[in-house]
Length: 391
Image (cartoon, rainbow, N blue to C red; front, side, top):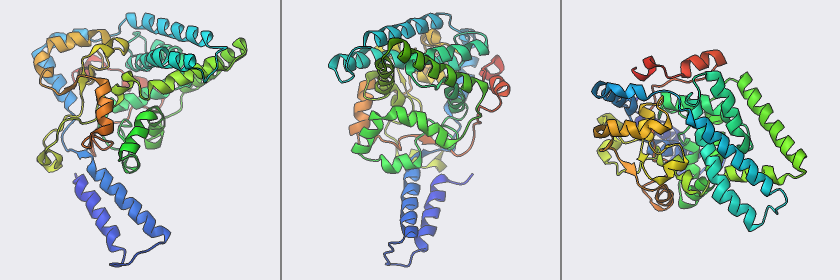
């Protein structure tokens, strides 16, 4: 496989040769050349690697050392009750605010303290459900995810699943892992102001970026998700004779993906916060760069233990309630790994630390596979069976 840094540097050199030495060109082609060269340089700034993603290797080692961990796999019955409670809570809050001014402190305070926390919880409930961890039946999980989607205000659960499962199967793979920032984002957002913009509006990046990286097949599940969500929003507005309840739900979703303590997990999970030596930055040396970070703090109570992120990527078929047990059993594997102690500190460092930014991600050119396509085939591919767990 070609060295990514060599490829981008060579491409930039070819474009530089196209311009006469010392000549300043003001035409459109020159602007495109300069923009492309800058984009290539930013792409080079990511941590490129030839190594395999670490989770499969560690999963096999853990199963060999502790075969009992496979018994932790499977759905968690408690999930459906937690989801039902949080959905009901958001319905109640939306009703309470139906006659409250959108610009009042009460509206925004409730949306930030309760609404954003609740919708972040539902984001991560849908994450759990996408791994078929609420019910044994894949169909029941698809339908329940649509229900959990209701307080979020916009349909996304059906699209989230194939993109997220591809993220698991293709961690760090350029062009497949839609959790990775693009080269364009690296160019535009490589500053304190740019990082502040990213943190403020990161919910939009996670919503829009996947569609720009690759397209998934539109299935009946997507259609049902769309129809049910739009019908729900319409019924709420019509029955309460107010658009403010839906505004509350949408604002809750926005704040959940902005400057909110629980939103720190988006960045904490895979951005590289460890100091990377020049030797490790050279992909030819095959020195692994840590690319997944866990968090074991109190906010896990509100977020389906998503902080146990190394554990989750190692064993995606283990439900949220059993991730602490997994870590306890395989402590010798997880204790040495880098971790975060605070999601709030993650956001603070991301903004102000010059060594952490949009390009602080591990990328690889090859490997992985896309999850998606015809719904029946996608369901078979995406389910983590025992064969998948041990593969």
